[in-house]
Length: 479
Image (cartoon, rainbow, N blue to C red; front, side):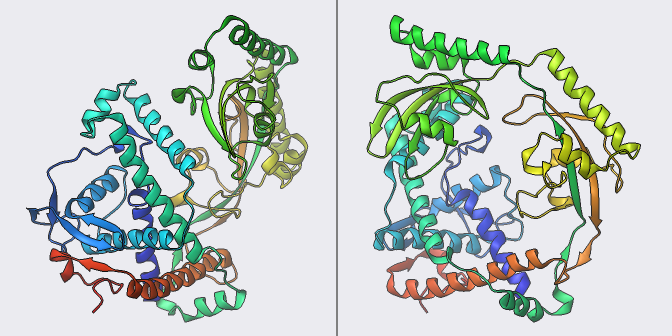
């Protein structure tokens, strides 16, 4: 039963990280309007329950108060975000909410430093993200959240983000340094009864060859000249940098906020070239055009606050000529033909011709971004990638595919399946990395349980109402 317990706990924690430990405004469909406060009978499951109207203080954890209606709002947020709550009870979800508050409370006791500028910047990004989907209508946003003013909304978002930040920092302190040795992994695996060992789904190893159309020097210079023109117009004619951003920038992420980013010398977020330019500037200065992998930029340094730099930027990407696109397409067609007729192996062609730096020197072998190994589990594969390889037989070369990414508007690629591992029961040698992750999760859970047990004893906790009838995994009732 040990493995089932691990999976159950981590399903709950993964779901709650979406809602309880973040205030996610990345999609307008995820916004849930407050309804009349309601609480389900605490022992019932999330979905099939008789509901009774109530509100009041459901629990107190240290300095934090949890209202009866808080859990309903969080469950509604989780459902809207697509979290699978089937089989989870309100008691289990409420217990995890208590846990997040315990983390946040203890973080305050341990004097965990809150990066207030980071929190405010995150709130700014969240509000701008929603407004971008509401056509900039702040009154509609305030009405939706039943707030009298923008400041009231910002204050509430700030508190939620701050508490989530504290909880995450504290959780990191508890589990961040935990590692497992090979012997611990072996012991963990051997302790799982044979009939309870996990089954891993079909996995593929994939390789790719990517050809990216080349940008001409003329196209690069045209973008540089355009950015220089913006700089002159702003400095000499008083034009607005923010207005230029709204009309011209190709950075969709920062456009709704007027191209604004907050950089911190101690917390790298941007690419090195961007940071180097920003940190070399004086307040109020506009940079000369410079290049990153994403294109060409100019930066306006708006404000310096100690280690924090508020910047706005305009991103332009050089145009691709039809000749460059055709040349890239012809090249990958030729490469594919050479692989099929046996002139080159796929790996040889990748090393010689591919423009994808991350895979080129591995013979095109792709790395799973989630597991950091070469295996892609079919049921967990990115849907777009799955659609590209679902009909490929082992060793078969795909047709030429046109694709894009954050850096390249157009790229051409071919894919192949280099190995296939069918559904199978966990094998220590073949599945070591997966088993190691399960062993690490088990050790982290035990560390959290030990930390909770000790911290609950030393923290003021009061559970009210029907939640006192819950059979919590942790001793929240201090029985």
